[in-house]
Image (cartoon, rainbow, N blue to C red; front, top):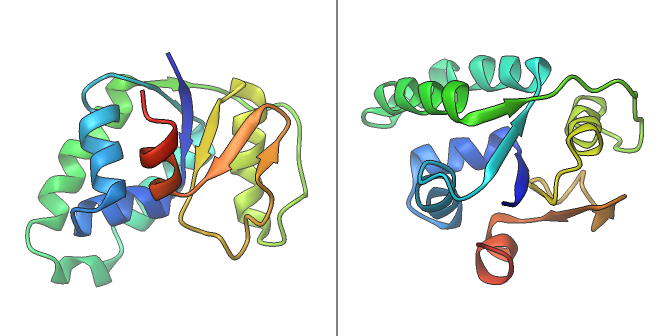
Length: 138
């Protein structure tokens, strides 16, 4: 089973529109076809971002968030990264690489192509939702 680290922006996109992020979250993660790797720090970021007021303009956003959070909490594997990494210029995004390293994730899926300019970190391929869906989905 593939191990994935999913950036917060992918979950937000999945909650707002039905594109590649939506397909990854609903057809792969919720269906139990991959192992989602999380850390306490990333889970906290999910909570913080999902509860931003600006998302309340989307119909049923917060209702869908509640279900998604429940799925994340029950269907994910929790890891505690031990090594600090400072490779990405946006310091907050380094936690994704730390988690990918600790969990030995196969993929890190992110829509943030401005900060994630590398295609691979150790064994983890860094891909956009579209790249993952078209080339690597199980």
